[in-house]
Structures are given as C-alpha cells and as structure tokens.
Image 1 (cartoon, rainbow, N blue to C red):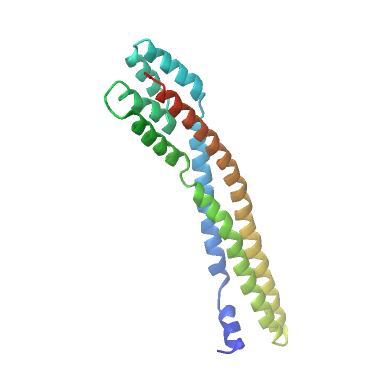
Image 2: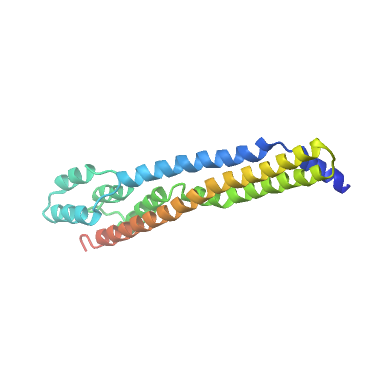
Length: 204
C-alpha cells in the first residue's frame, strides 16, 4: 500500500462527510440544552420551605391537606415527598422507599447530561479529523502543477478551517452549558439529600 494510494483515499473524502456529524452533534446538543434549561426552570422551588409546610401539616394529622399541597408542585424532587406520604404510616420499609425514590429523582435530574459532555469531547476530534483530511488534500495539490494545484491547495485549506471552526462552535457552548448544568444538578442533589434525611426523621 503506497503513500499515494493513502493520500488518494483522503482526497476522495467529501467535505459533507466531515460536516454532517458536527451538525448532528450541534442539533442534539442544542435540543438537550434547551430541554434541560426548561426542565430546571420548572422545578425551581424553595424545597425546604415547602417540606417544612408539609411536615407541619403531617405533624398536625392533616395528611390530606399535606398531599394536596404536595400535588400543587411538579418535578422529581416533589415526587419523593408525594409518594412517601402514601407510605409514611404503613409497615413498608421506610429507608428503602426513600432510597428508591431519591435514586429515581437523581436519575431524572441528571438525564442527558452525559450526552452533552460526550458531544463537547468528540466535536473537536471530528473537527481535527476534518483538518487532517483538508491538509492532506492541500499537500496533494502541491504535487500538481498549474491552476489545478492552486485550486486544490485553497480547497484543502478551506475545508480544514471550516471543519475546525464548526467543531469549536459546537464544543465551546456545549462545555459551558455542561459545567452550568452540573452545578444545577449538584444543587438539586443536595435538596434531594436534605429531603431524604428529613423524611427519615418523620415519625421517628
């Protein structure tokens, strides 16, 4: 297998082969970011204040009122409280119920965060691959003479710059929003831990 054959393989790779995966990553990343931002906005409550109100109602024997108050709020964290109220005075294993509900809540809160991290990581690699193929086409153009050589050289450099720029346009916002969402997730997980510990003390 000669070097000319290898170079010819890179020359045969069209630009869209490099660009389409980057565009797909950008669409997926944007969709997840928008969905997560809307989701976090919808579950932005003062959970400790809500929990104290519910526990006061439960302590006064107003279980129905406590459930009605709980059902006015949405989100996986409130599901922990609402579902627990159905079992808090039963013979069920309270610790296991709280653990299962908390794990389910954390899973929902962390949903798709890993995909953003993956996109932020692989996008520059896709861009680097496009840069390599573009430069290979440029070097291939140098081996030719006349106007064709200049055209191939310019085309290869342009392809390398386009794929690099597109990949960075995807990776940079993805990393920014990934770090932002990790901070939001950590905050909600702390609320889950606080609620779980508070519910464990209920009726103790």
